[in-house]
Each structure stands twice: as structure tokens, then as C-alpha cells.
Image (cartoon, rainbow, N blue to C red; front, side, top):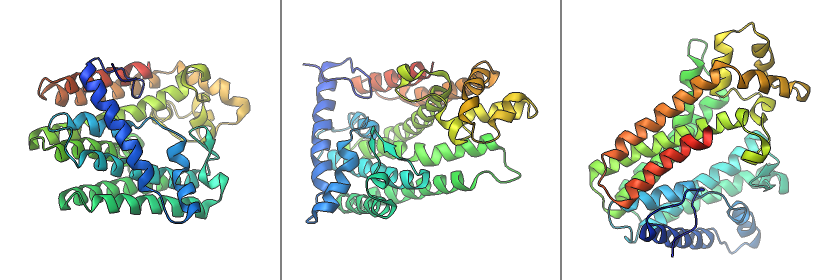
Length: 329
């Protein structure tokens, strides 16, 4: 019996698919119990985003990476839960900073309750992650601390924006590496370390997972412009409406600062101008340049993955690379 697709990615090897399905079920169970509190409200708020679902993308990275050692090692599932709790805690904080009303199709915690509850719930999830982490050893604690430092620094740099003498594209990519790539890199490293995989494999998996994470976010940038709502499930032009300068926007602004498109993209795009902005940006060479950058990041991941032992998990990682490219096109 094969497992259902994970992150819309069918896993061809039946045994691997079942291992991943079992791992996901175990992670989901521990994830829910790890946030339970004697206070019913704390439990309710903490489970709010867990129950809303999600791709469990980082969990998948941990479980696939663990295949290069002993995937049944006792630390693998708790390690995946630590990663997922860290990710979820950051989402509570993100929604406060972005004033987001919706997350995963449900009212965000800040919309359902208020900003204070959302911030404190995120802090609680970080605390519960630390509690689990304490049993996994000092090396994992150090990796988590370094990862969390990168995540926060990436968020700060995104908030502050590039310096006057800094290339906006270089700044943007560095934000993605830290804010998005670092935790996905830690996912690969956790899976390798906790399963007892060799150090060289751990390093390759960490680099590959970070590259996949950056490429995934670049794919989201492209989808926000190129897709229709029926294809992506999201409203096209969301980033444009919010004035978020993603990679295609940065390339378009740099190419011709005096163009009509640059005028439209200089700030949040009014609803009346969204269709014009999308039409112009879709036809602009900036889209191809951003796609080429995505391809480059995926190829970095492929280089490291191709040098891993030839087991079904390597094929799954390579299929994930293909998927990241295909979803953006």
C-alpha cells in the first residue's frame, strides 16, 4: 500500500512511501500532544494552526534525510516536531507583523483573538520546541539556536530593507536564505544527525535542503504573478497589492526605473491597476531572469543530492527538485 502524496509529491518507492506516511502520522500525534497545557485556552490557541493543516514540508525533509541513516532512530520524530513547532511559532509572529487576517484558510490567531495572544502563543510553541530539544543533546540545541538566530536576522533585514549601498537583489536573496532556507536546511541536518548518517551526508543534505527552500520561495514569487487563482488557490498579485518587492519586481524596477511598469511597482499597487501591472510584468524579461535564478538554486540542490548514496530517498529528493521547477512554470 503506497502512501498519499506529500506536498503534492508522489513517492514512487512503495516502502519509502509507507515509511514516510508512518513518520508523518507519528509526528502529527506528537505535535498535538506537545502543545497541550493544563490551561484549556493555551491548548486551544496553540492547536489553532496545527489543526488548520499545512504541507508539513519541513517534516518531509527530516523524514527523507533520516533515510540515509536509521529512520527508526528514537530522536527522528521528536526532531521533526521541534522543526515544525519552530516553523509554526514563526507563523504566529509573522501574522502579527503582516496584520494577516487569514492563515491556511482559517482566521489567523491575531484575527481570532488579538496580537498579544498570537505573540505569546508563538512564544509558547518555541518553548515547547526547546523542551523537546533538551532531550536530543547539545549538538542539536546548538544547531537550533544558530538556525533561530538566522531566521530572526532574516526577518529583521526584511523589515528594515536594503542599505543605501546594497544591491536590492542580493539583499532579497540573503533574506530568503536566512528567513526561509535556514529552517529547511536544519530539517535536513536534523534528519541526518538523529538517524546517525555520516557527517558528509549531513552536510550535503543541509546544503541541498537550504537551496530547495530558497527555490521554493522564488517559485512562490513567480506564481504570485504568473498563476491564476484556480491554478494556485491564491489570488494573483497579492504581493503587488501589499507592495512586497519580490525578485521579478526587483529585476523589473532595475531594468527601466522610468517605465510605466516601474511606476506601478514603486509601492502597493491599487486594485484598479492590478491587472495592468500583472499583464506588463508577465510579459517582462524579469520573469525569465527570476526563473533562471530559481533553476540555479535547484541545480545547486541537485548537485549535492546526486552525490548521495543511491537509495530511494535520493530519488525522492531529486523528484522534489523537479517538482519545485514544474510548479513555478
